[in-house]
Image (cartoon, rainbow, N blue to C red; front, side, top):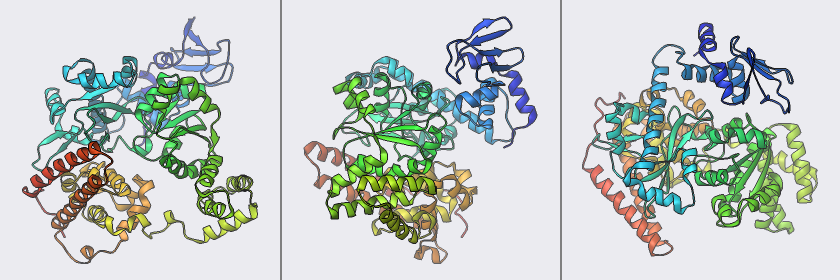
Length: 590
């Protein structure tokens, strides 16, 4: 929605420029003005002036200046609409008309209210003693609890539901925020239970979602995030960014890790420029977000195969954007939390100083796996050249080819010949041929689940009640299904297929592949509700088989017992589901 001139002027009039800038810059009175050190360039003598009467600021050193909107855009790296909206929400200016904005504001207010409730639970409730003890045992002090607004979700099915009812928060808002789900009978239950809770904030510090970690060793999954919603897109948010903003500017770099506790540990150790993805792979949107603050990224990976694969996946993102990316590899089976606790902040700082450029890291790791002989180098080139082929900018690709040639001790001409062959094959992301991961027989029921939702949008509510993302074994399909569930039901029903591919560009190829996949279900008029139930039944059976296999291959009694308990609980859920017929009212038209 466009911003009217009247709205913009009202924001300028009502926003307190002295308050907004004073929260970010130390100012002292200087007659009608206020003076301080400019936040946009280095200086020893203050030349940055704020005139609250005129509602403007100006730096006589670097020339920066403008209104409160201009300041927020420059300091917080916001777009013009983002800055206006942020100020409007803070100073009570209504932006636009219609129902979408009030609903969004109400849901954000709910999320921040719940954030406060979780935090108070952790600090005050006797039931949270196990959570407090867990955090103390992990050596996190109460200052860190407060800095990240850690909380505790009560060990009950309706603790949050009851709190919300007392606060007159509607059940629909809780569901829309991903905080509550409805069971097969329609009874609501808390999404997070008996977990340490990590509020997930956007770059401006507004709570948009939550992550939860188990306290009891036998509970699973270890980490659970609230589902994606209109506010919360995992591919567009970084945990700890709100707390790291100032440090990012001062350090001129970002440290990118994988876990919430890793971020907290590094902040405690003085590395306040650390952030983490929220249980998903690094995306281009993440880098676009970071690009507002810095063009230097240090990736910290575990020293195992998973860490190497993470580097391989993320390399094209950095190479395409020309972002300076370096990699720190930790000892096997250690994450940043473990490393800093065992070896200290100085040892971690030393690792940062010796971080390897990402291309060199990939070459070293690939050669280490394949060997440095002729055959090993050929296999390594077979892995690395497809990554280089994804670089779109010719100049960047040419520089990278020359660098790779030096590292691999081959000619640039040989690499260019391999690139020419690679380019003759259609790129996967630009074709409707289903990726290999989407053609496996084992995943056909999961694909069909998504296909049904693309075909009959009205069944999204039924799917939400019948099967959770966690029940989908294939990680790619699980993420895609979770994204679809993150869209509000009414909005999902009205979206065109092209809207979904625009909303989730990183999943566009998968959506197109599923959309065109041939299936006997789509060749005739069918009972879509019954087809959905059948596919869900197959997915649940596959989940049981997966758990049985995990029990057989468990390493030790503890792991086997944990999986057995998970299996028993899952079977109980299925038994209850089989005996209840879900009714959504009117059946979608054929």
